[in-house]
Length: 319
Length: 319
Image (cartoon, rainbow over all chains, first blue to last red; front, side, top):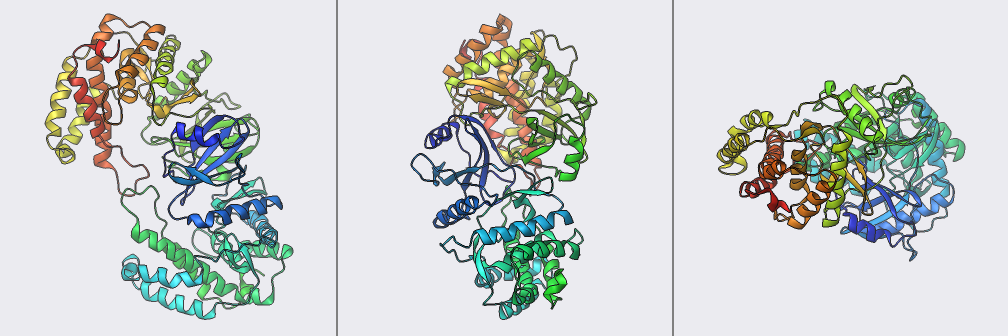
């Protein structure tokens, strides 16, 4: 939960003069979100979200992210639409940060994902992938497989302090995953971080997909693997194959999966688990005292990783 | 900034069935607020705030707080109006906490209070005091002068670690303030915590007074003293007498101050500074690692306390 940067009322009023949104009506910090500072913004023109991009986001990537969101929103994906200022620009500066206003999306994210959420999620993920097909710019996945080795190396000296033997286990998993990583699966733009807190529902319908700031150009099936990790495990770390079936079935109905994609699901799921394990481990080892955000326990993803390492057949996820 | 308690979508949907507000449209945690968990809640009936009362609030006081807000809102004070459920009750339980829904108030709180804010603030404070005159229930101020000695005693052993000599300085100030504390000034219901983040403005007009969970029955002029401390010092801890004049003048225009109240302003301001210094010192010394809220530096109020201790004439605040 986080608002890292304070915005004065004067600076906000001046910032808003660049937009055709009328006068300010309300402004509150949003507790959700870890990477950036987000605010609810109401003006005479309606409700919006103001995002200040904090240090983890590379400013050079912002036009790609905002362009992707505009592209997807224009094709019916319920994602935030960047609001352009009177000068046509969607990106400007506020309080020493890069900043953008996007449209407000209704809905609530599911705190405890249920089977009924997984079908709509799979359909929405496939629709996102298809809608992005004709967005030409490309962004390599900065947290894809080539990043995992260096990330691991930075945490390795202290990994065993988190869990005995963790360092050796992760090194072995990393080497095995990279050796088995598929090279020629269908690729395109993926969300890469579609956790439950990034998916809003209204009743049983998806009303919003948010937080595209890890989006990248990578294997479509890897996005599915992220979702299998984030949505289909129970609190006791057991894999709920009924959720997996709902997710994969709805996805494949909208974007059929090739045999190669299904066969690669175990290693893709291992990779996705490793990616979140490594970033959480890094944050766990490097969180300052007094930090605004409590780091997440990396061991949750160790449990997932071990599950995936024991699977050889992608159909076991529910196909 | 804080959301301490997670609310599942299922529990929220069930909770909302007790209210005549239609279906849920949106739900986000609010970053602002230290004591309780607050959420923006949108339903088919409009915008609301959901508050979950955390451990610092005595549940026995909640009916008094909610009753006061309902009373004040009914008399035109722009404060949150508690929403009654279908059963007539404004207070019920959610996620293991006492919880209430109140109306949403527009506006933005001033991050850097200016002179122009202080007049409207004074007028609003006087209006709040007058509107509360006929609210019969009484709540003793749990953080009034009798509480300061015990609070100080708990921090005294470690006070000098925060600032050398702090313990002795606070003990002397405490004894002097309590010896000079006025007994027979006009009293009634006060907000007791009207800091800038509890006052919303739309342009130059006050659109909301929020967070009544320190409100109590105490000296009216003590509420003014809290505001003089919270609004009229600059970032370098100098007292801005033009702000003081604006605040006191607008207040007195709506609720004239007696000579005794003016004469008591220095000791009331000393007491208000001591009260916030002591609670901040306590939080400073007792904040757990990994806490969601960064404690505020108690020394900011030591600087204010020293200023007030040097004043003998209440007119010097700007009257």
